[in-house]
Image 1 (cartoon, rainbow, N blue to C red):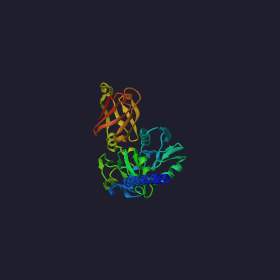
Image 2 (image 1 turned 120 degrees about the vertical axis):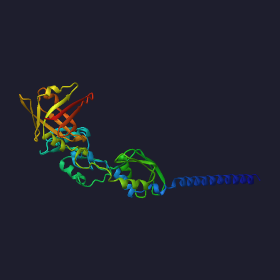
Image 3 (image 1 turned 30 degrees about the vertical axis):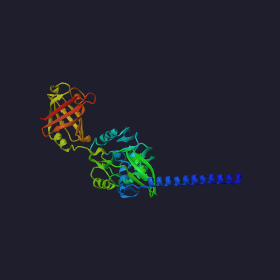
Length: 365
């Protein structure tokens, strides 16, 4: 009797154990299925980006490295030189430490109209390629070869008329629509690499809205991929990408000013440099010659000098060196032309130190 009772207890024990095990297995399966259902939910079709689609390719082209700002040095818009570096410009050694130094290179090249300009890079240098990777270049032939595809007038895939406002957030799905990660993108290089490493079958979705900035500064809020593609297509050629070799491409045309300067003899009718010093030039007449020479006469002596103009930074400037002795040395300066016509030329110079303004006025004699 005792054995039978013990046997029945064991049966109940194992039955309970089996039920517990079955319940645990069912709970695990249910939880796994529920988790899978939560993760499998795909993004809306108008917000999905797949590799090699039109919108994916557009985004990558926006994210390409823009190599045009230093075209005055390398003549190639899809690569840029890593600074600092040294160049020889018309046999003058120039250390290029930032993009601000490009203007010095341009000024030397533009100094004379009919001279034979030369620019030589001191190798080795490092270049940044369109895909944001870097490469060491050891000579001019290597640099020319790597830039052949994007020389002035050549091919350049970079879309510069549309930019993204960072950061961007993407939800990433694998080939089975399983949610794999959320990725935050902070710059063009990260964006290019993100799409460049997507595999066939992967999906990505922007966290909308996304802000894009057009070439003219207009900002547009984007809510889906179709809108993004339409904005890019309508704006892709709507700005000057400055892919030619004229640095900044903002030069002012100084032709009219030069014509006025050469067609008259001039006298100084106003010179203010902290005080009115016009009287010091009362007897002087100034003649400007086409070859960049000047002649200043006061009835007693004739003094040789030089002049040169440029239209850099969007304004006309004239560099005067009319003589190194007083009072002519006081106007030895790089002046900005603020007004001119056939009978009047008004020049100004703003001090970088204290922003004081010096004014010089020539009138036709």
